[in-house]
Image (cartoon, rainbow, N blue to C red; front, top):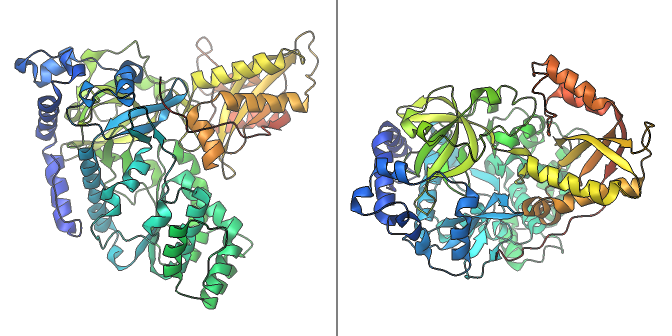
Length: 608
């Protein structure tokens, strides 16, 4: 099921893509047959499928339930604790991938196998011919891709639990990848694999600047990470230029592999190059800085769909008109699809699902729940207890214009698993449907890889209220909402709180320390991924509470109703996204407070 071709052969790659998408239905049937033939003897599937006669598509759908993470967590936890892989997979589980979503405050764990790395390598190879179809000459230079690894955890079984990209970059598939003239990086592997993210960032930017005349494309995986790199460059360009000018590397880069690999690229002093870069970076405005520093760059490659769309205006400011390219849709659970029209406007990005990556099913989502997606995030996905399995459709039977939640069955031990992503069908490429990523089910706030749900936020706000508002301040929190503020780098969570004194209707007296403690308490109560982003990755800034005057949330309701919400069914949105709503809230702010400390985070074990 994993085709092979020479990624240097664009024509062969495009032909393979045509074959895969044209035969989507047959390939999906083969995928399910192979998964069941391989894994029907696992403990998990044996409980539902009995005997050889049950290894077919219809009995699989009739007997194996659609599940969420809480349903499968006990099985995966047993493997993490040291039991055999054949609980869910006939192939040995070689590692556990940590999802950006969490369960009970800890990262969700997804099983993975050695063979799955082959599948991901194939997926990455399919991105190359698509880009070559639209952009000429990519074999005549390099890509400045800023790639990073994140902390990993050793489970009681000895299996490592790590983010999916860290898994791939540390694998032999990446380290020993065959030469591909279309995919040469400016960053040496040693800088990508550096454990210290600050040293890694500095070294990768230094290599990208030294090789600026060869750079044909720039990017990172997520828009948020790329903008952090721009901010890092703004803060460190003088030091970077000093290293280029002298042909040395600053003393605080202590990782020897990083130092050696960068020094081999520096190749001695370069006064002229340092002066050129310093002149550009020293300009009053950084508008168009990417095109000015890397004049041969043809596009910026970053994911700008889903929650990353909030970064598009800032990227456009820095890019100087370079196209923003989102090439792929993937997660810890599965790699899904690729963008076959990569130079399209970011708002028009659709991903064509590759039918050989997993077995895909789709749970219809009420279209009406998405009519106000642009305004506010509610829990738009259907409730976990309200799954109408008879309405689930196959990959090739989805309807254009409809919304669905994707359900996957993988080669690695996930069976009819709800990923939680809401997608809209935008069309078909041959027989393979194309989807626009709409949102993550139940997620209200996201800055980087964090995914905070309405329930997470409620629990954190409640804890802060109990511990800091009732005594000694005697304030009542009457309403709240939130907003992901990405106007600065890094972005941060903003909570709008309406407070009133418990015993009168006077304006609330706000004590700085009490409110700052509330900010810190909320952060302490948010999940593992949020705290890692704040503490280790520095990819999220301090949480802010903006206190608004009494009556503000009445005005917000009036605004929502004026935009079409029903008065009878109105619920305060727990996250606001529209300009009109933010204007109302911000115009009534009477106090602003920030967390004064970083929440605790440790890469703790994942035992139950």
